[in-house]
Image (cartoon, rainbow over the protein chains, first blue to last red):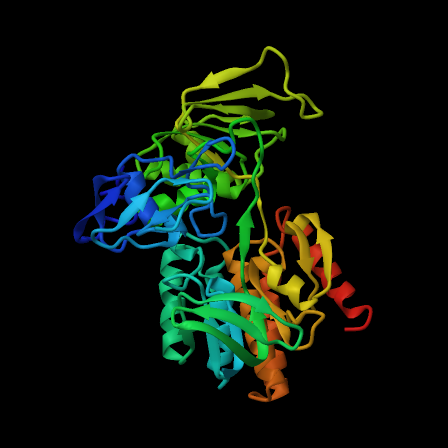
Length: 102
Length: 364
């Protein structure tokens, strides 16, 4: 859920709405926001699954340190979605294990 | 690339070091891996403490803007999206910038890389929506998205209490704060704010497990005895969809390790910390530290430590008269001391004194 109004920060700054493709589905995002933010706003919490147990993983540190939130972005695996900005038309896929290059 | 001073990390400590040095005529290059400098200041939307000279009453994000403005004013070269991945004993720094890999060859280095949140492992802790309290704070205050609606906070230190309040401000419900110790760890003023808003702070309680399939759906908590063992029969399930772990931070000091700086263990400062003297110079000549990397405190002390390092570098490079430099160092030292007074500061002050003492012993 987006925080549109905030008692200290005021209203959310205007940003251009763009579409990204998450596991083949269109998702509305804001240009320049982090991929992890766009997915959180869209209610998506599982970003990848682990190699052996296929256990779900999501955001953990949100500042680019822990690599728990990595996904396949535009065909490239292991992209830290919490520090990678959204671009219009981006392809974002749930990563399985170490992911695949496309 | 050659530079007089390289500052690694653009948070409160790094910015203050850069500003102090630059305004004394030092050529400063500051590298930061993020898109914007400011470190964690822009998620600190609360008013700071201290006295007027520590900018008490000003919100962290405003202080961030002020520091960025000063850095611009004094001509600090800020290299953003630039990761410092190596610090070598000859002070060379390996960096990866957007246009490729480079080596910085500074005369002096200030390492101001900050801290990372500790975690706690319990069954289910790897589920999506179990995250650091700082992570939730970043999502809400910087990215303006709420990762959950009903929140359990684990840990009642200042980070846990402040993040609880800020999640409430953003419209979430905070179901409880659990604290394994018998008393609240953070400042009473932060605790009171959330208690007034109806948030229970459950001392002598801990989390047993997080439940859910794809993400958090419930949390099980229980009372603990004097030895921190869960009391059978006291378990209860909380209907939460976000669990924030606020159990402290530790210095992000890999670069100092790599360069060969000597470390010692200080629990009051978050663990293994690089030894430094009273001007923040480490056991490696020309390598300084400032802020959380040199021991976990808060942003106000990080700024003063940064100032100490920036002034000391200016003196060492011959940019200022040593006597004027000594006076400025003493002033910054006095302001820093004022932030380490009282029951919350004594342990940190004593640990820092020991660090300075240890640093002076043995060959550099």
